Image (cartoon, rainbow, N blue to C red):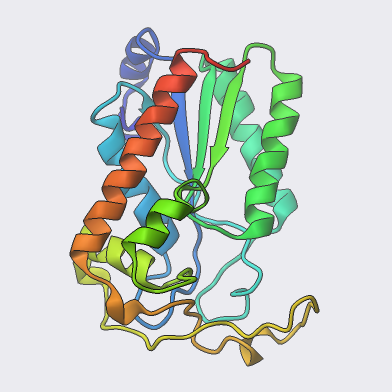
Length: 240
């Protein structure tokens, strides 16, 4: 059930069928010159809509803002702090718990390290405070790294590259505005620098020119299958 479209009565009725809800997390973040700022949100939310057609669980509206570090200075990126993301996540899960939900799947379309750590930290807080809660935190790009590396032709493909461009071509081709050039960040690790634009002008990590709609559809099916597997596992109460 798409939560934002449901009425109060429909929510109460559906709650008798399932205690599982999925919360998607995305960003407002640059994705090169060819992909929209909502790429992370678009991909995860549209794929989850497909997944919940196969399983009778709740799908919450996406959280559009996330923690962006390397792309924070690029035009269009609007970032929040890890603390804000942690507090927002704990607040919405706690309130959903009070409404009778017990199984929580937090799925992020953004692969940023601090962003993912904030979600995992929130989950650790929640698992200690709420008796009877079951919670999973996942990034499809992390869980399916091996599968995706076989699907694309670009080694070390990542942000706004071949895979993400292929997924947007599959889900919303009208939003793909040409192709950015192949590019990789040259941030001077392990140093943390203030002027990140100096080392990553175009905001692309990979080769978008190798993207195809067919690759996007294959990637989409992999993600949907993984999500359904996690839904089934959490509803079977495999882990406590």
